[in-house]
Amino acid sequence: DAGITQSPRHKVTETGTPVTLRCHQTENHRYMYWYRQDPGHGLRLIHYSYGVKDTDKGEVSDGYSVSRSKTEDFLLTLESATSSQTSVYFCAISDKRDGTEAFFGQGTRLTVV
Amino acid sequence: QQQVKQSPQSLIVQKGGISIINCAYENTAFDYFPWYQQFPGKGPALLIAIRPDVSEKKEGRFTISFNKSAKQFSLHIMDSQPGDSATYFCAASLYETDSWGKFQFGAGTQVVVTP
Image 1 (cartoon, rainbow over the protein chains, first blue to last red):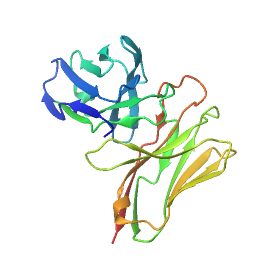
Image 2 (image 1 turned 90 degrees about the vertical axis):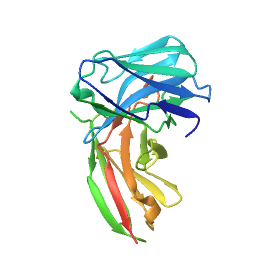
Image 3 (image 1 turned 180 degrees about the vertical axis):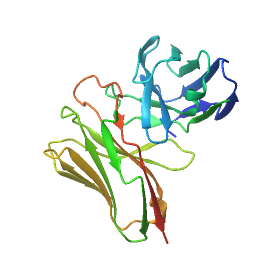
C-alpha cells in the first residue's frame, strides 16, 4: 500500500478516553490526510498536513487534533472519545498539493463503547 | 448535506455484464472527478479520474462518462469480472485551487459480480 502503515488496525476504547492513531509513511510525501469512513457518507476529511508542523482542519475536525513532528508520521488524536467517533479511519499521502492521486492506508477500525 | 449523490447503493451483475454507477453533484465549480475502488479491509484506491474538458475517459474496461450540463458523471465497468467485486466511490473536488484533498465523496456503491 505505497508504504503507508496505520496502527493500530483495530481498537476498542471506552467513552471519554483519549485515543491516538498513527500513520507512518516511507514515501517521503509532503501531504498527509486523515479521513473517516462511515456508511452512507463515503469518506470525509478530518485534518490534513502540508508539511512538518503544518496542519489544518478538514470537513469534520471537531473532537480531533493532529500532530506532525516528522515527515513520516502523522498522528490523529481523539481527546475524549465519543460513540459518534466510532468509524474506520484512513490515512492518505500524496505528493500533490491538491490531494489528487493520494494513496490510502489500510485503515483503523475504532469502536468507542 | 451531501454534495455528491451516488446511486445505486448496491449492484449485482453477472460476469461479462456491464456495471453502471451514477453520480450527481451540486457545486458547478467542481472540476475534478475521480472514482475510487475499495476492497474489503483495504483503503480506497484511485481507479480513474476525469476533468470537465472531456466527456468521456476510458482506461481498459473502465469508462467515465461526464455530462457537465446535467452535473452528472458515471462509471461504466465493461465485461465485469468477479475480481471487480468491490465498493466504488465517486468524488468531486476543485482541481485548480488549493483543494487540499477536500474531496466530496459519494456514499459508495457495492458491486457484486456473480460467476
